[in-house]
Length: 636
Ligand code: WTA
Figure 1 (cartoon, rainbow, N blue to C red):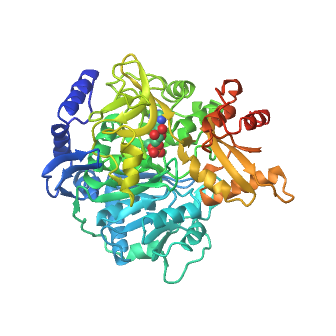
Figure 2 (figure 1 turned 60 degrees about the horizontal axis):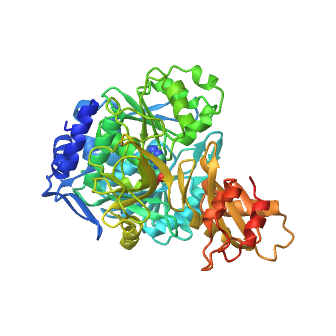
Figure 3 (figure 1 turned 90 degrees about the vertical axis):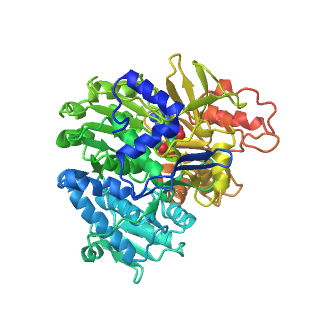
């Protein structure tokens, strides 16, 4: 094993130094020693951040499922690969061994083929957190189809947008999903979406809740009979290193969601490498990441990273508060979880509840705790450390993005000393830099600026599906020659990094990235709305919450403000999904604008945060008088 399981700070430092001094030699060794290849690469890396174009392991041939499944069968065939914990604690957990996973993935891959899916085709997966989701993802990878998983909390409109953007030929869904004490009718959301998706020819439907659903003749098929009839042997498609593995959509500050494209070899190498080092996974361990596979965290650290390491990875269908707020800790105790990885928003929500939810459970199996998705505040960090880790488990505050494919900055247990709220040090191969607003690099310690990465790493997204120009504009134009993350960060006196948050118009609510523009577009669709602006404000549990300023047209009929607020949120839920609903809506007579007509969000942000006395100079605005009236009726 090459550089897997770094131990000690000195070893981290020397490994890191090697990775910077000669990145090609470094990744060459990691890739050669830890994976199975059908053919080795001709060239380790070629790159040009101006174009931008990045290629890793060019010329190599492989299939990621051989690395995640086949190669484990001989030594780990009976080991649990996926441990499925259902929503209902009284329903039995399912231990899916590597042998069984192989059987399921091969059958599913043959079902895809017999339904007309071939290498390079896009397949949309809209499923709850049930085993079929992981199996569908791997089945696509087996035959070289490009999966596009859409989080099953998105609305039919949002689903249709994503299906059409990448011309998916097939949708894989279920009759419904369990979510705490609720059931959600996923199939009818898909039916609505498909009214606008001409390219979709087939819908495969997994049975989960047993509800009575409509099946459209000639299009919809139940999954199970197809699987039963399929052969359990499907030879892995031969993939080029740079063939796309998947598309995953993430919100941008403007316009359409961005379909980030990840390719095969680099993504595999980097997610496997970081999984091993960041979580210090040992052969007998049970690892649990609470994310949904609909997000990048689930792709990289529930499915691909753990399985490439032959790990046991837990998939949890439910929520942290069902049937009560002790559910996470009950599951940790039940399955003797060793590594636990969750989001700050979940930690904050659970820390608010009675400690009796925690104290009744034996958490002594835990060795490493992780967080991801947004900055973790000091209080939440200490609660996690004290009550869950019993001050005996390193906390890995892992910073990364959908675009980065894997974790870029994080402590490594037994090497890096942790520091509350700090993601600390770059992982081997990652070269972070801070820049000021004028594009000047800030060298040395004790600096705060915009976080960029100067050198490519294997799992970086290669493009935005169908829009390479937007990829260049978004990530490679602000600070030419580097990848710009969109985040602000500071580097302390010891060189440790703390991520301070987004510096663009993306707001992270409960760990979900939301662009302001799409939400404003949704609100503006309302017949009575003239214009709107969305800003974030700090929220005790969600991290950030959404504050909407809405200017109405003259005619609003006889609707009350309350009715309008309800309608606006219903519209957002319909066009995007319930996760984007506004926490506060203030009706205004107008929005503060510059003389060129640009909305001054800075002022609106301050008002939403209650910083009324600190608005700066507003005299140059087109309409300074509007600010006074907004301040007077602010909802703070
Ligand atoms: C934020 C999630 C602070 C950041 C893997 C980033 C974080 C965005 C952290 C990406 C962290 C993620 N500390 N902020 N440990 N991890 N973020 O694409 O703003 O859903 O740009 O990927 O989440 O969110 P995404």
